[in-house]
Length: 443
Ligand code: PMP
Image 1 (tube, helix red, strand yellow):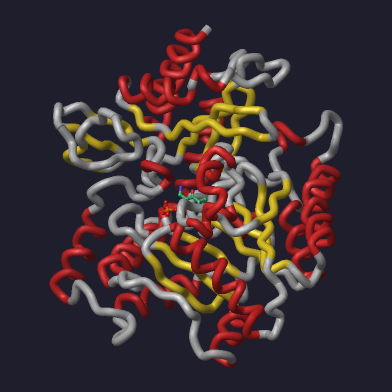
Image 2 (cartoon, protein in one colour):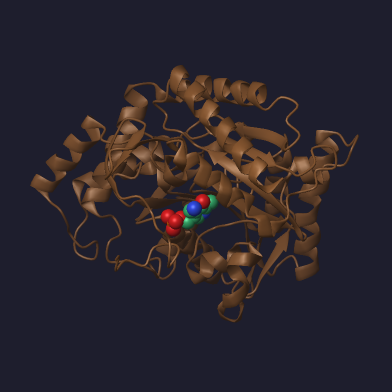
């Protein structure tokens, strides 16, 4: 009997006892290809010798020092490194322990920024439907996933949601990308004007939508328009790159490919590659200056922020990615993965869409490929795919979501940046079999 409360109170899960490269091993000696990096975390795979060595060195040097008393060399080095590679204008770093903490801090920074500027009437956060930004109360409030929010709603701050940029389901037949981008972004301006243009703090969005929709990239120009609308009304743009950032899409920050920089960006998962819990907010000088010229500090803090072991993991992971030129592999293997998925699922009646950027790919399942009708939610197709995949020694991240009452099942693929062609081929082969078996069991 287990005494740990896992994600599901009565789940029976294999016991992981080891990992090497892109494989994990359970207690029975079975191996699993890690094609999702857990939840897009393990960007260097498992047991990377250089990261382990860096962690041992840091442990021998200093395991912990409270940031209320000290800064540390390792945290300073990580911050320098993140600023060196940051989107233009972001020159300060706030180190935390994960994605929800990063979003929570970014939301509070945005609010305090306006209080320091004498605009304390600004109190609204706008985000998008069917989004996920974390499970703490602030981050959960920002998210637009009703299934996750429902029972906690009385405790959540009021937020406002617009439609996501989700071409497969929301671009109309014959509508050009440019027209759709303008229409999807216009929803933000409409919402700002409805709430009062001097009442809004920030707009929060994932650059490429991960956990709720399955690697959905924005159409070209969407974020340029969003950036312009935020600037027009002095609204801060917070990008959530907890999942899609730190190289996952082929550039260090996904927003580089959209030609914009946010005011605040939240990163986590791939920052430390799972070797330690670590996340960060990168913020603009303008926001930093409002704190330093105002009350003098950002009114927030966690006991483990800037933890030396977490900083050591983050720095080591980022150094390996740069030294080994792994972003080039993300682009090359990402393209290969997309092509192999398209071949395997060509004319598949139950695969509606295959999309993504870099090594961040999503497959959307539908009961009817012509009408895009999703499978009935009670079939729990995504859970069946996970089970069939695990039985075949494959870890993928399946999910189900709802857009305006339409539920969809998706599979997210986010293999480590070290994956090679043969491994990609093996992932696609096992996934194809798992999808076919799961669909057959409900048809
Ligand atoms: N934002 C996004 C986009 C995420 O995918 C996640 C985690 N799935 C979070 C925030 C929350 O991160 P964490 O689980 O580390 O708190």
